[in-house]
Length: 185
Image (cartoon, rainbow, N blue to C red; front, side, top):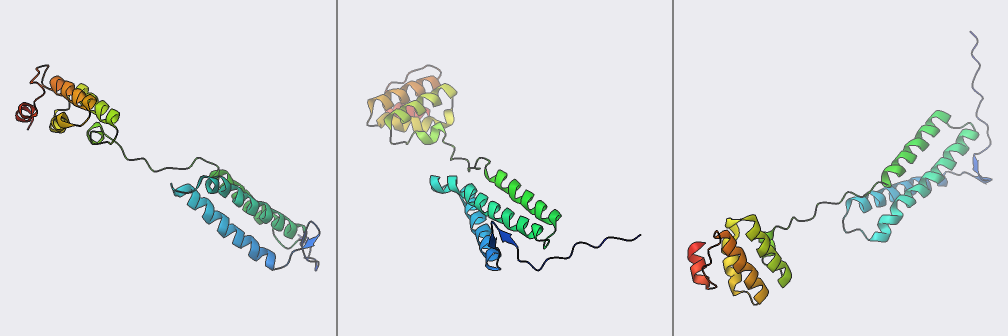
């Protein structure tokens, strides 16, 4: 078998849109790759990333991918690079870009329970938390409800009292804190 030799590489330098590709172009492309990939990863993994940065990060990587694809294809056209390698690398860059378009993974926020909301600044939140504890029959939180009987807000005091009555099986011990403190120490 007589194998045909590959076409020898030409001495002509590769070019992109008529512009000769010099060794500086690969350096710029790799700097753009590192910068855009780091920016994209940071924007996706950090919950405090500014919104404009989060939106721009994938597109910065796309700018790299387009420049990289043009560079690789010009090398293939000049027969200085394997077409298989070039298309494989361009495909990987395209898949990476598509992954960057996926929604950001955000760490779960702190879970707020009715028990922790009893000390919220907002009187409506405290009142609602007391009401929820009463309906859930959560006697473990009853001492905190007893403390709310001295709350500055009448709405919170009323909600805490109603919740304590529910927790006490419907028996009302009045609005005096001491009696409730004996019942729910």
